[in-house]
Length: 162
Image (cartoon, rainbow, N blue to C red; front, side, top):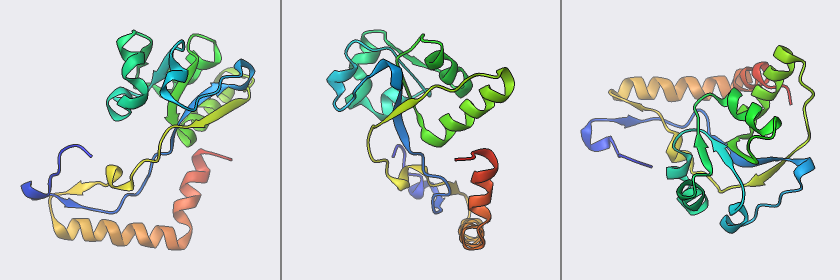
């Protein structure tokens, strides 16, 4: 989880978004990922810091200079689709969003992908922290309301049509 900010006056709210990070490969490459050793000959592109979040999987890849952490997630999709990297570590919905964006921007034909489960992330890792209890409570209340009303799902659907 990193640094716990409760002792410094932080008030943790409920997680609004929980990332569902997976390994993504092109189906045409017929790659199977079930254990860290399966990455031994593969090049991996991911969000920055993934090697620290998932050291069991990515430590050796990083040590062998086969890991590229880049914050621009559109670049991650391009690097996979154009064959520069074998594997992307990404949230499945964020990846789909950028695939759709590439289709619109460049008329790219999307390729079939395979998602490989990486791990089960813990919702506590994604909780926002506030300086005040009232602000945190207001955030939690608002989050409940937009989920109950269906607005939360409409926001997701606006960006990602599944």
